[in-house]
Amino acid sequence: MTKAFTFKVLATDGKARRGSITMPRGEIRTPAFMPVGTGGTVKAMYMDQVRGVGSDIILGNTYHLMLRPGAERVARLGGLHEFARWPHPILTDSGGFQVMSLSKLRKLTEKGVTFRSHIDGAAYEMSPERSIEIQGLLDSDIQMQLDECTALPAKENEIERAMELSLRWAERCKTAFGDQQGKAMFGIVQGGDIAALRLRSAQALKAMDLKGYAIGGLAVGEPQAVMLEMLDITCPELPADRPRYLMGVGTPDDILKSVARGIDMFDCVMPTRAGRHGLAYTRRGKVNLRNARHADDPRPLDDESDCPAARDYSRAYLHHLVRSQEALGAMLLTWNNLSYYQRLMQEIRAAIEAGAFEARAAEISEGWARGVI
Ligand code: GUN
Image (cartoon, rainbow, N blue to C red; front, side, top):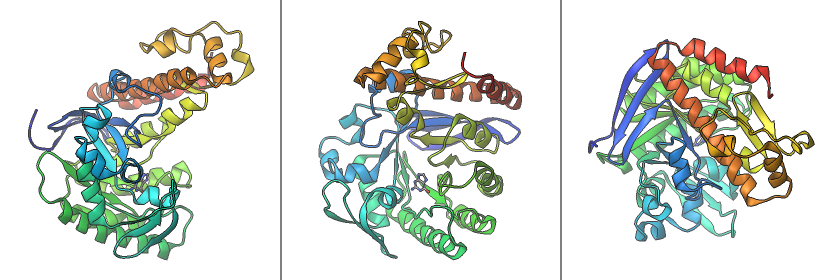
């Protein structure tokens, strides 16, 4: 494996891209889905299973890990890969987004954010430089700039202020990150639902010549059509030879439509969180296993799946586990859901290589429309 961080587009089909990121800890096949491992664990999954379903990279959160167990402690214990027993690439979010949604008494200034922990109320300060320092202590392979994400709907001047602040923080994060070779620091495009602000943000970040570009501030309350319009505007402004990461997205349908617009990387809590709430993703749409109609159903979720959770357990048993709030219910459904998402990504990559992305995406959507059998 190379010592440097590199990205290659291997094939294109329309605007959809099949690519490969290589770095010392491994290769990321794109389009990629990154399971969310907020606090050093992909909830209800062994790392062997996370890997086994086809994950090349997982996501960790600066905010959660700095509060508990603490970034300096993780560093003393050998870094996040060693601590969590995941030797493959890790991307960490910078903390700003989580501070805004989870912490108490937060205050944002040019310097950074101050906030109180949602766990014990302790006071913290996080500047762009401290966010990069923490991500370094965790030994994260892909680090995100500190940014301010505006929830929608919002006033234009408020979206613009947050976007301009995020650009200044991107510069500071770039300086703090320096020229580390096998790792990357990504900038984050902001600008809400305003085309001109998205353009300004993308162009200013492009001029910073970063190793990758995320698109943030989407799937934050706006309709899907608005999100897709922002992708239509933003993607062409970003350099074709750098990976593009759509943060916090999304449903399988969001993923298909975003890949069609040139997105390479995704993360979302949906498959893992839904699994803990009794919801299974399948080729024929979502199945709510809490529903009484599954109580006597001996059929598995999907007998064509190569995931044991989908193939080897009856819907009646999964229903029983979910209704009894058994840990195994959350474990099996999370396994099924991540397996479904990674299978979807594999099919997307194969379809782009074959020049058949549009047709395959339509078939996949038709499968959901036919409904659960
Ligand atoms: N996760 C989902 N959206 C965002 C965003 O806009 N910024 C950051 N840092 N993380 C996110």
